[in-house]
Structures are given as C-alpha cells and as structure tokens.
Length: 261
Image (cartoon, rainbow, N blue to C red):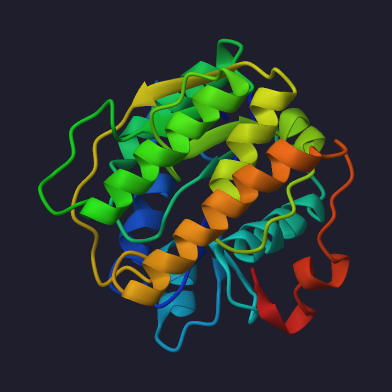
C-alpha cells in the first residue's frame, strides 16, 4: 500500500531467467516508511524457453503465461489476471524484467500518482543513461516518436520509457489494444488525446542483463520502429473510442494452467 493506494506491478518477460528474480525481489522488498510499496507483482511469461517463470515465482511474483508473442499482449494478459483478483488495484506500475532500471525510483512515479497524476512516465532522457544501456536506434526512435507526439498533440514528451505508473481508472479509459511494440506510445498518445494529467520523472538506466529482444536484433529494432510509428499514424488519423478495448478478449485471457499462485 502506497499512501493509501493499492499498487500492482506488471512485468512482461521473455527469457529473462538471469534478471527476473532480481527485479521481482526488489519490487517485493521496496518499502517506504517501513511499509511495503507494492501489493502484488505479476509476471507474464511470454513464451520463455528458460527458467523465467520459475525464478519469478520463487522471488514472490504471480506468474501468468501467454504464448502469443508481443509486449502489448503480455501486458494485456497480466492486466486481465489482475482484473480477476478479488481485490482491486488503484495503480499499475509497469517494469521491464531485464534489470535495466533502478526499482527504488518507482517511488517517484508512485508519488506522482499520489499527488494527482493520471500517468507518470519514467524518462530515461531526463535521467542518467549508462553507456551501452540504450542503442543509437533506440535513442533516435525515442527522439522521433517524442517529437511527433509534441507536434501532433502538444504533449511535452522526452521518452517512451517502459518504466511507468498509471492510475487504474485512467488505464480503463485508454482502452489499450496494441499487442506488440506500440504499447507504450499508445498509452502516452491516448492520455494526451484525453488530456489526462501526465508527468515525466527522471529515471536512470543501466545496461540490461541478457540480450534485448528488440534492440538486440535488426529485426526487433525494425519491427519496434514500425509498430511505434504506425500506432502514432493510426491514432492521428482515426483516433479511438475510450473505454472500448479493441483487442480480442480471448487473446488476453490465459488458460487456468498458465497461472501460478
């Protein structure tokens, strides 16, 4: 519980056995004023062929499995699991499972929500980026996407950082639908379109553990770029209907065999 807010952390993960236990443990142990900050950690194992799921569960996370590849579908699957829990959550914190961020900096994002933000983005651009933490294509892609968002929606944006917190009521209004690489930009653009209170907070970046599935390959880099730019174009041209998730419901619901408690 963070200042009266129930917080769930969502981690999409694919073959992150070396890092996921470390990330989950830090989230579970994160405290302020001697109280736990995170009430629930859920990891979506997005088709891992290693010990990602087992290591995440051992560290204290609930694990849900999604065989369809994609960052967005992994997030949607974890959110669907949270929706089925007996207790609701006020805030969702999104974290990557590669240990590339500093978990204690989640407190700044959550403080932003507690102080009135609907969406709090961890901006790596405003923080310190360890050498090698972000590749040149990532840096350029962030700059380009941020520039387009500023141009089209007059929203001050410096980064599409995956380390972010959002109020649950705001998340429901966004009707998140992207199943692949456009997830983060979809969230930020829709928040701008609805004029939700969005703030950026400096977060630091370090070199991730293991190889990135996006920036670590040419194919991943190209697909991510296409996904991000196509999402910006789609929302610019067609907008969206808030509160109506357009993803297929059966894509977001894992089988009961895929959930570990």
